[in-house]
Length: 189
Image (cartoon, rainbow, N blue to C red; front, side, top):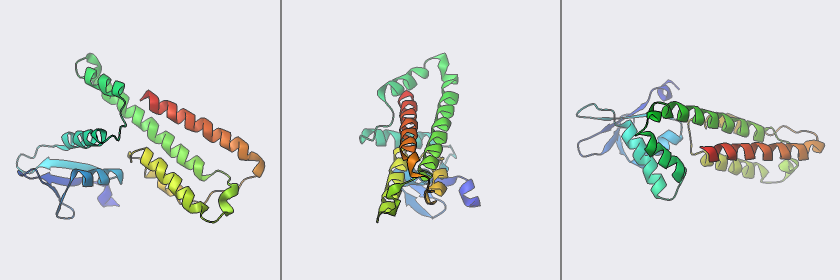
């Protein structure tokens, strides 16, 4: 696990090829995106100059996903980001974005935890556990693999705790409320 604590070092050669120093092979931007979705920190440096190119490549990964129709950032957010580079708000924006994403990660973690603790009358049906895993994988993919998503993995593996059947409707209402709150937070981003 100590290996996961240090960033994965990717070196960019003069040919613009990216080299994974851990596995001693070349990687693509999609490979780097997969490492990040798995929870790895990545550092990309120019082999010749030693310049840190991580920000440049992360922005390129985001731009490629957005151009393929995998839109996560609404136009008004992108517009505000562009505006923030020309205003005094530039100094506040990074802290605001960091706090917003931390809040989103916490909300995702709580949602995953709550899902694993719900009573489920369908739990005895054949194939239900596979369906539940698919739903949790969908939620994880919806969150785009933001760091902190891995925190929900431990909760996924726990079986749902049985509760009294009379609470099913209350629990469903609570889930709907939490989902609505999460969607509201996402739309405000």
